[in-house]
Image 1 (cartoon, rainbow, N blue to C red):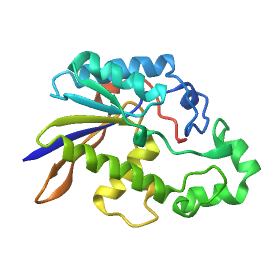
Image 2 (image 1 turned 90 degrees about the vertical axis):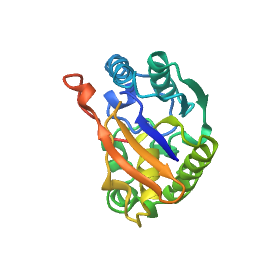
Image 3 (image 1 turned 180 degrees about the vertical axis):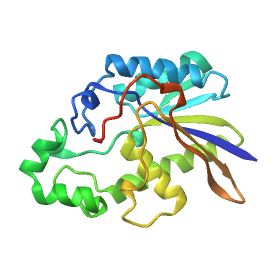
Length: 212
């Protein structure tokens, strides 16, 4: 029996548009993001998704709603898929962080799994909570087609977890806003990747912001 999981990054938020580190700050979708998620919903209309587990942050929840509107899938808010907490970095631009936290920012760019700061959720901890939640919902929905709507940092650690990647792994995969990826799970084989960071539906819509 195979269980399919669509892993979706939220549409562009106001924080993305302004080039700010977002983390747990609750930025809404930008106008561009609203267009992106509309196209995302259209692309997934015939996917067979019946349940959507979403981060509680508004940029993710509104993305989940756009997919629910076309698929008819029920939305379940899952706190474990909330974005990483970035402490004092949240809401700041890359330039501000690089100026105020030069050593920490250098570590963020090279080996973020080692970064420890007050209010900053360690990436290994993020990986445990996100992959733990994924494993749970897969067990709860054997043979189903479900979706997870979350954030780039969460998707990064989920893929690292299911593929058994060793650190440093955080920068080895990238996810565009309103992209979707597909994985499947079999009890005898575990997880496998079907495709990664699909953005065909977003042609001509917008550019991607590199911050978290």
